[in-house]
Length: 335
Image (cartoon, rainbow, N blue to C red):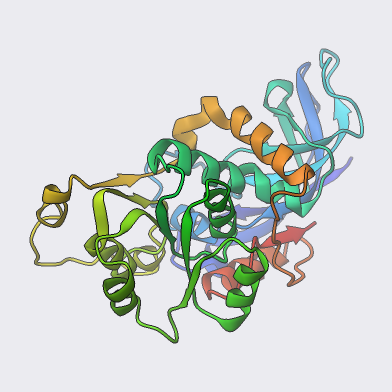
């Protein structure tokens, strides 16, 4: 009997090493419409994972032990007797909460996403690239030639956002925190201004160079970054919240005594908006088609972090690496 090695949440804790465990379970017999996939690469979503193993994701009911992880790419190794549209050996992408951090997974044939090859690049495009595309289209409503500023721009999401924005001939301002990340962003040929926040003060740069000029702020950091973006929005500007990295790293959200947010944006007709990928599920295929086409034509570069992580056990190390802010591009683990 083939065993499946899994990284699971065994208990809720603030520490992943306490919350998680590696276990082995037999692979169950497939139902008629099931597809068995051998996962090859999994994507690391450390901030979401941390909320999960701390028991702070409000829309998921967790029965322990619970497999965590969201995205993987792999190959089909077995199919149920009623499966018609998925062949053995087919490279596939999967995006589903509670499925990725294991060597094998079983999904329904209708949930299979076919891809040209099971590589880290396609893992980055789906779902991270999909999020970038949908957030810019639906929430940012980015228009040709606008000024957009992107925090965490050298990360898995950010490096796709800056390229898609440049495809719309926008003026792109990218923020990162190391010289290595600056070089990555330069290599994309998509950024008009790169700010290393370790060397320049964000608020000072924006007030001097982009005061009331930011059409779209794309922020996954929060706190001081959110404040600086908000302060410098243009008339009709949109501040898109795609993450809360600094707040989620704290034991509780910062409490502030200040005027309400509308005081600073009402007279500009500006707005603050939030993006969640799963709310646009009906558009995922459209986004994949667009991104895969760009990538295959060489018009979109996908950056995967070059640090090697191998095996289920290394997921914890990869998560800690990402949370420490060391990543350049998408962090993946090869199983």
